[in-house]
Amino acid sequence: MSLNKPENSTLTDIQVAATSRLLEALQESENRMRRRINLLVEIIFELNDDGEIVFSNAAWEKILGYKVVDGTKLSNYIHPSDLDVFINTLSNMGINKESKSNILIRCQHADGHILTMNANLVWVDSGILGVLHDVTKRIQIQTEAVRKEELINDAIESIHDAFGLFDSEDKLILCNAKYAQTFTKYNSYDEIKGMSFEELVRSSLKYKGEVIEKEFIGDQEAWIKERIRRHRNPEEVGVTEIQFGPDKWILVREKRTKNGGIVGIRTDISELKSIQKTLEESIFEKNQLLKSMATLFKSNSMGSMVSSLAHEINGPLGSISINSELLKLELKEKIEQLNVSDFDHFQHMVEQIFEATKKASLVVTRLRSLFTHGEDKFELFNLSVTLDDIYSLMSSEFMNEKITFNLQIENNLMVYGDVSQIQMVVINTLKNSMEALKNISDQKIINLHALATNGQTRLEIADNGPGFHDSILKNGFELFKTSKPNGMGVGMWLSRAIMENHNGSINATNGSKGGANITLIFYDKKNDNQGGRRQGVNPHHKI
Image (cartoon, rainbow, N blue to C red; front, side, top):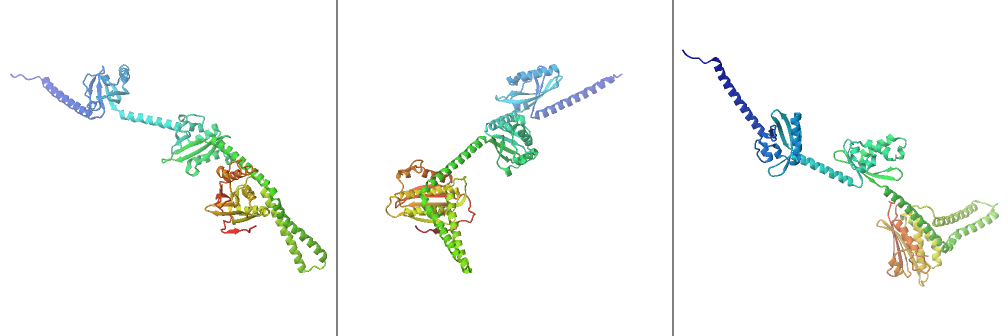
């Protein structure tokens, strides 16, 4: 009789075989998983309840530079400064059964340098699974970015002017404290970050007293729209000035960036405005002083011109008197025998009276303009006419002093300035020449030549006197410096001040054959579109 195996024995063999195949499959699966885990760039590890490493992938050695011996605690590889944070995190996960945690820790590489790792920890029944991701470069980049941002912030805060940067949507993305203080009640960028330009303008109007321009008074919204338009079109607007209250002024310069944003610089020019106002007042006072002194000098010259004026006025007035008497007599005798020829004769006599009257009136008008102290009036005037007027007023004086006066003036020499002040300079120069010629026994000569050349007008006055004293040539036109016994040393100084005030110059030299030369130079300031200069010389007769 044969013995048969029990049926359950056969099943056990089958189960053993199946279990063996399952274990092999599991082992193969685990090996595949380990191979795949070892291919990962992040460090994968497992800790037991005591914090000991029971598994780590190949990335550990690649990243940290050494192998891990199973049973070594992970805390051995953590920077001492981060150890408490790591231990407390593990403790909390064990006590509170927290499933996940994420912390930054620093680990030391085998060569000694420090790596910053982002640790993602997951609690499991057997301990903790973790992933370490090397974020050293990212942290370095972030740290460098923060450092650069601090440098930029420090730089713009050190700028003397207010600085602001807006993005393409007109939102403020960067500014210094001065910029914030210009617009708002706040003192830093963080307090106004992200505000639109419109919000800043409204804040400026509310808190800073920005002055609404005259054309927008009564329509605040229109003014705000115009401010926004100017801000968004900096190339069109250019540099602008904005007033805050009576004494505060801001200079605004804005420019569009390549990405469509706008960068703005605001400079406080209140002090410059105050200086400008003071300077303008000083210039006005200086001009008034020059005007007064010029008039005084011309008035002082009036006594010596009395004979010339009497000659100029008495001539036409005498003609008026004679013709009037003749007309009276002939009218009395021939009133009843008038015919056409007689009428023409009488008309001619009346015309002579009229022309003589006009001439007398013209002399008086010239005299009034020459000695009147009015307001400063810088304008384009005809220097040729002015020189003719001066010649007419002084001609008798030249004759009385037996001075040959040669006058050569180009027609229509247009000069920009105050005609009254220029008259004073010319008269003072001529009076100096006349005084220098008083003790000359030979023929006395004064030459006046005026012409336009190379974008400037030159007026040259020369005499054949003894010339300038060396001290005058050395000291120039200093105040109270004179070589005349009874001189004050003011005339030449005043002449220089007037010419400088006209952006011109005055120079004194001695001629190569003796005598004094004075040259006045006027530089063209405005285009002469009032008839132009006609070239050619108009020589006047010699006296």
